Length: 306
Image (cartoon, rainbow, N blue to C red; front, top):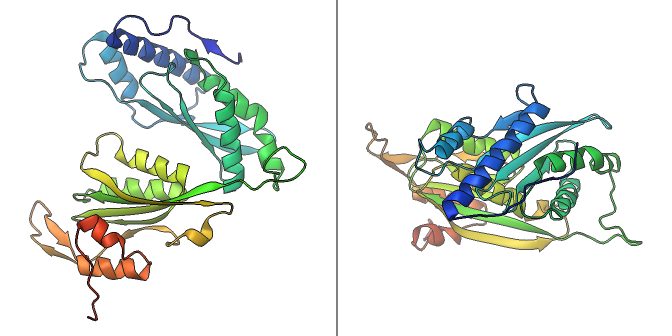
């Protein structure tokens, strides 16, 4: 496999033609990937219709800009016998904009995973604008990932003395007008557990989500749950701290779970009922997060025993 595929020319003409050129290159790279990974399930598209929608856009039968191509490739590493899931997001202007990549494996601890992705990001950073690089990223993982698995006590930096790696621990408080749909609730829980973050999702009206963990995991969670068209949602508050450890001592929650509270209101067809905010406040108090209540709702919390 060649290391780099370069497409000369850069952006030409107006923005529309430039965007279409990028999308054509992305389809070309996807064709290469499907030929490299022909077995079902090896390349898993986030939106199974995205390639069709891009083709329609390029043919002029679709006016709206199609969603970004997002997918996961499962790589089989021969030695040791492990799997790596490579998550890829292609911005509309890729390959002239940076590709978003993240590799993960259940066989890697958090520190090893961070180091693996640091190495991958550094390698991809050597590519020039206009170069297709997903195939090269796959080759890099196949050639270089073994050391991250085999050496369970990695030295953080290549120096005579090990240097601790600082990571950002992040906690995001997310507000939505409502969270009702079963498929959306399932997606939120599945993404939370897959990314090894902790927190909760309070369903109903309003809908509140708290997610905590390493910064890149929380940001990936935030990106994933919003895709493709969740509009009535916002991050109301974020708390971050630098840490040299695994961040476990900073967590306020032990897992990522759905929070179900009592509700009141109309249980008619619209399911337009409000969650019991008094119960939610008590829940926040138990998890040392009472201060967030006013940030989320603009209401000062009142102690139940006052």
